[in-house]
Image (tube, rainbow, N blue to C red; front, side):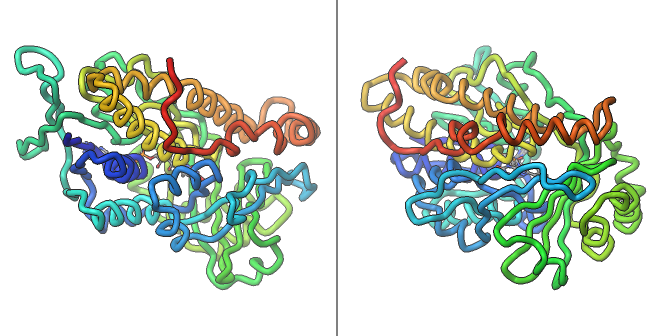
Length: 406
Ligand SMILES: Cc1cc2nc3c(=O)[nH]c(=O)nc-3n(C[C@H](O)[C@H](O)[C@H](O)COP(=O)(O)OP(=O)(O)OC[C@H]3O[C@@H](n4cnc5c(N)ncnc54)[C@H](O)[C@@H]3O)c2cc1C
């Protein structure tokens, strides 16, 4: 069996690795060139995502690019500690979670897939999908590149992210991504004395007066950080006409009134992600059509506030490969295996997206003001967002055991 994967991000690369584990050949079509892929800021992979990486034999590759994270510490604008939540139950070797550049995760997995014999085409932008309906509908499906080149597989996997073209090819009425009301900026401050003042292996969050701030010290003595600003989505024109220095000045003004090193870190740091609009995707009615299926953000994007998007994509990869393996063993056709994958994944991922939406909304100061909101958040972190209450999410472990029966 041959699969054509549209998109070589986390979901596409991990799916190629997982399919290889069950003897399915894959070709990956990624629109970015290698150089263009090296953009973005940092992300954290929770233990459930690490478990999925372990299942596809790629944990070591990713661990080499990151550093460990254990806990999230939440502060108010006055510097008061509102609560602390661990990043989850560690894996057997003690690893809790990993923080690494977002681009290194996808690039590392894709390079590993290539090393294991997966065919990868970079600079290959898919323009349309053929073979799903009409006279040329068949058991497989075809991805058509912008230059007209065609790649046909017994299976086509849309792993092309939250603004997925494949999702709309499968169902023209499929929803568009939803803007969650936050813009995103990320950067790094190198060799700063602030690093030594922050607890190691921890994210330090501040529910600031005008923006939400997160910072993590690295073992090398740097601090990586991000800022979420509650505001309308940033237009292409504004992004193109604003320099990094102007963005940094804007962020410093938003953070200056809050306690802690946020404003100083942004002022003396280097911006790596600017004016990124934050989206999620809560519910897609059809995950597959014929022999084509969606994985990762293309079908269920949690907002970045969930800290789970990459982990969900990694879990999808194993679930899909396992369903195809079981289907082939039981003599089922591809569409039946795709339905089994959707049954396995939909309840969990939709719950994660809902949790991410709640988490995003706490970053937007409400009409009650920050002081009242801080009192509420202290209760939330004492009773609602606790290690026990989050165990369903980050305590999940992936294995190659048979897919649960319908
Ligand atoms: C700022 C930010 C911070 C985040 N932090 C975290 C975090 O801490 N933890 C976490 O788990 N998740 C986090 N996430 C979410 C995580 O990055 C995503 O959930 C994850 O990248 C989804 O992977 P994906 O492969 O489905 O989509 P993507 O990463 O978007 O990859 C899609 C790929 O498809 C390619 N593509 C798109 N269209 C085409 C086409 N037509 N033809 C060919 N290729 C195409 C793209 O170039 C891209 O490489 C964060 C996201 C953002 C934006």
